[in-house]
Length: 496
Ligand code: BES
Ligand code: MN
Ligand code: ZN
Image 1 (cartoon, rainbow, N blue to C red):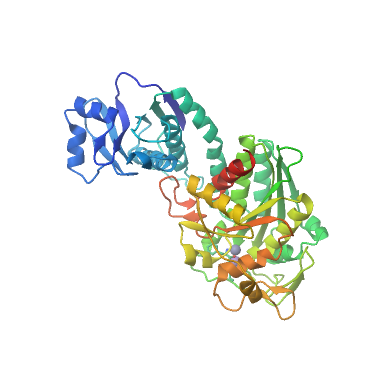
Image 2: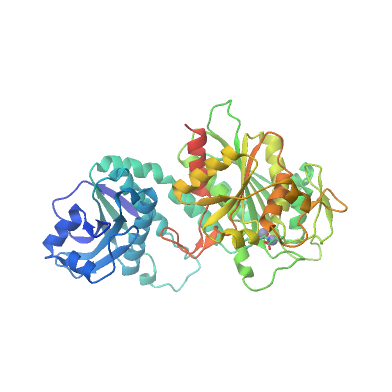
């Protein structure tokens, strides 16, 4: 979809979206159109419950000289922030695509008392419209043209359109990066298996200047990643370790490590999951997809930072060769792990991936993303991801970045009493505690045992947020949760 920025024209026509503030305060352009149409906008508001409150819209049809008129609720002045702007952009895109419109003009009137400059508001509306226009239809052979998104162009009308264009250019790399992560998440597991995930990452990331290395099973075996490899024993597909580096920061800067869980399909293994809903477990690689998308975004905007992204890519299958409950493996760290439940496989692949990235790159901070536990979905639902960390400043910066871009986190506890629950009778630890109580916390405790001295570590359990019914800026399916969060956290913490 093309985005254009324009100064205010003398008159408007066609499909036009205009601002209305709280309590039906028509902003300048809305007022002018209301006058030109003999009060059509006020009449439409009277015939509805639309009051201009934040992120609500009202569509007015059939006015002389206009196609679709969309009233955008911007709420009270201080409510019109980047988040609201993105939501409005998403709502416009959904409305326009639903109605089969090809072009919409969006008028960004300055809202009195609003602290976000109109140029920023315009840029974020355009971003929101783009993010909502994502459509995964490669397997739909019978989709009619009217079922496809129709919107080809939006024109942002804003005073200081050059500033808005610049602000949008800074946001634009996020679009394809989010779409990359969503594509990976939505792709079925017969198509996207570890080798194919790694191949796509290599193809798409080398293009933007990221260095990509891929380790196969033989190389991982040599490094001692027995716990990771055990998860893949039941699969016909070879496990892979995807290592992406973007070293564009000062030479003296210790890198930041991003680690992603990439279980391309999680059947549970011998501890087989029930059939109902199992198809959703193609999304169990969304941590890896978020890391890959974030690496793309950092490179596309030439971030001045040193980052390494590492994804453990496996498939968890039941098979004659699969690992059994009760098996004991020696991890790369030397610690031994008793596998009680083969469905708690995420922590098994992550422990070796985390150890490897710490050994090889000596990161100052390590943030890991995984669709790790159903328990976090019970705790936090789909609104927030769980955050576990050994470092409060890191936690606070991640939470702040999340709030700013609308991918919210909630800090969860860690502690020695929880840690004790994963002590094993015959090995150093077991991969689950007795019973399900505190399941997302005991999972995090397991990972914590693989964090090296002096590394600021955070684990984001994104099982509830990586996949969903959709919202203003996200269609249903893979959300790409984490891509913009990681980018914002790095920009705010390491590039200032
Ligand atoms: N991939 C799942 C967790 C998951 C659940 C992700 C729902 C997304 C939505 C993970 O590998 C898993 O199976 N976890 C088990 C752990 C249990 C065996 C201790 C779970 O949550 O039930
Ligand atoms: Mn599992
Ligand atoms: Zn899993």
